[in-house]
Length: 470
Image (cartoon, rainbow, N blue to C red):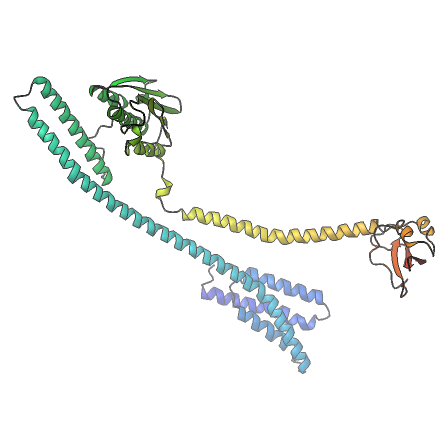
């Protein structure tokens, strides 16, 4: 049911008008039964709120007021008409107040719902703009890499190919040039893959072979590096493609750094694969502590490795000791790239759920707080009633020990801590100069027992008395 349906709203308005007739008319014929009148008004208010939440409030106000005045028309006296108008307005107010409260609460919820919808639309719009801007930057970067670096690598490969055909080169030199040309071609292929990835090609990895851990170590050894490798449990057979590629890239980067900063030194590579994780550790000696060639100034390589490790839910640890530089990479064996939440728009649905939970707690608190306060009031009232009834008792023997002329301070130490509730002061009223206290002879919560009275004046007992039980 939608409150925007005119036919449904008209139907509810008619029902609300009919319901409003009963409480308005009852203010005349049930004036001698106020509790019944209040019950009729309360039932009508509940019916209006539950069955006709979208009825026109002005119809309820008009019907209630007009009915309360109309039932007095057989006696068109001014006083009766004014009384009917007052009763009608009061009845209309009682009926319309909960109806308006529900209407306001509904409008507030509708406003919040529309707000969350607009927030979701805005979030999608911003995400689209961010994606478009990122794509433009990626395309510009891909074009620059392809036209600049790609062109340079191609020229290097072509020049090396021409040089390898020179007759003046020896066979060893020719083999070295061919090896360098192959490395340049491989670098060109790597650049082509990066360009395809930036452009979001449908199959960017077509024709490309990912690096392997064994291949990274073999390439370093072919370049003349001394590498001690310890590969435990055949890691390439158990690791996911992403984890194997990350370990291989980490070994390539660290071996490259070692070749730059500690050429000719022995480099140790350890790869240990467990049931849940793989740990790759590469260490190399430092030639000069604090020198300009130290690995501290290695550029973006380690930053890229750390970012790759975070994407795979792993960790990269870099240590620089007095004589050694080491890098340790820890990854899950079956690592997969995780979603980078920071790169996505705000999850409006989750935020709306959190806000709804907060509203729900606030609503429960709004109901619970009055109940708790009312319960506390009842508890304190009942507790005081019980205490006052129990601690305001004096026996007949104790009362007989009190007589006129006794010292007030002495007598007060004998009297109970509290005075009884609702003492019968009219049956034994104090005199003008007296202060009288009333105590029951036994505990009686609802039926009064005999009451003993002790009155003081001028610092002493002026008189005593007894009020018999009714």
